[in-house]
Image (cartoon, rainbow, N blue to C red; front, side, top):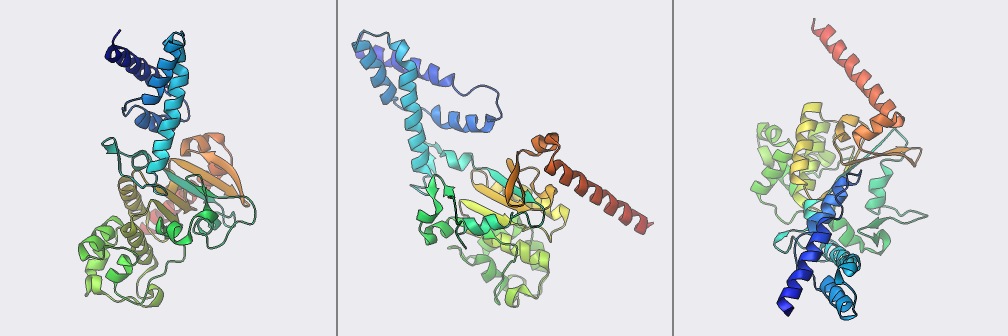
Length: 330
């Protein structure tokens, strides 16, 4: 058998074996999908090919060596995904396709009652202070070992206590972004659902806001801060109860825009309203500083524990509010 024929046989055997991996229906379906996205993107498969050839030269049926050769290919693919991450090469493309982290970023929601510790997490991630025990990692790197400037450059945070400078709305939204053009600012404002409000002001984007934004409403401050975070376009977006002063219809529109814009990026939403976070990929429920539950909206409802209890309570409050509004209208 010629070298070309043998090589083609190896490659076909490897592709067939890899195609059969990570296909089972499990709770890790999205993880499996992400693995297969990179694993089946092609390549020369040099490592498994060499493994099969060494097996053949040693008098072993090369088909028996497929699991070992493909195991090497899995490790190699992991190294490629790791190299593409923002903390490493920050590549957008791999073999002509968007890199894995650009396609499979996820939204994590953090929910808890007042005093549960949910707002402490953004402060820890931004390293406003460090954990006394244990370790926080991003992409496998200890947070304390990442230079502070690099860490904060890769995170856009909208804190509970939004801060606007005594400056124009355009400059406030563009703060921290390399692109300060009006077109870019307007696009971010539209996605944060604040553009229409700004256009109603006499001076529009040149409107001056007082220190800490005292001349505009709480909801307008929150949406202006979200627009600023979108301008930064960081790999990680932190929203710390950033929609608490926004009505439910506007909240839904902003969340829809975030899902579209943040595809392939990591978004962490800290909230007390379940309506804000129920569509997140993962929901972390905190109680007294500890993780009480973890799962999707449907999984947590089926568990019937704290999350389900909070959901029923909030649904009841919503119904009573709607009934009260209807009675008042009559």
